[in-house]
Image (tube, rainbow, N blue to C red):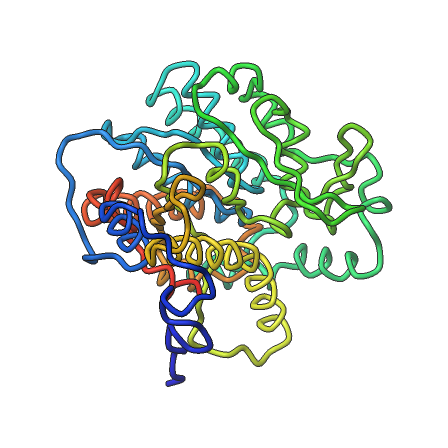
Length: 384
């Protein structure tokens, strides 16, 4: 078995040797708070009945976004959880705006109902997709679709023709599903601040659409896979999937919310034990690494600031401690082949939802007590 890299390889171990002068008038309480964000004091912490505010960071991942559906459904079911802001990308952006729209209509139950309707709408659209599992994969219980003739044909054609040629009318059935359910004006009134990420095609920079900019086009831009759909034009600029530059972006939550707890709903596997050796496996792993890269960089910056505050070398009035939490199902999601991100079968989406609900329940049971007190994930070991 390959040795998993040590968490401290190639890095400064703590803030004491960073080249910043120590600030002497920082209160011990602030130093302790920052230290608990850097290295959790305890792995688990059960909570009582008190309500706690969180920010959500929702990754994209195609149909695997149904895992996030399950996580959100589980969190919405718990009245102790109060949502301050949500940053979402691609499928995460869709989950975010659907949840906010339902919340504006009928609170928690409205958000749960609308998420349910959205993913059932996705499943209805998927019934007519030419990309379906083969009979053998169904018999074997495989959710992957890379053996599907439709998938193979799409993969081959996309290497030579662009969506400007293969889809000149830019048809996207997800737009219709989203438009039927989401009123952007209503979502803005939910009381939840939304941050939707897309990638500017010309500049390569991230564009974060906030509540005032919210539109169906913004959400579709965040989910625009450039090999399948034309770039989405908004105000003269063109956008691709936000996952290229922020999957999801965390800095809007840090800059715009006074809530210091960020809960990341992780879809794309961070770590894999096996090194791929076949061509498709290599491409899939490169894709995972690419779509996690911006998150990894932001986590390094968050950890660096937390560490310097804990060492008394940054003014806590000018900088802030950020506590990190994560809801994930690494074992189950690692088994999901990358091609299954295009599988919209109802049974598969419900399977992912159930995994997400179980992951949310486990986090609420084991780690919700950490919210407001410490990180529940060791950032150094997990991301750096």
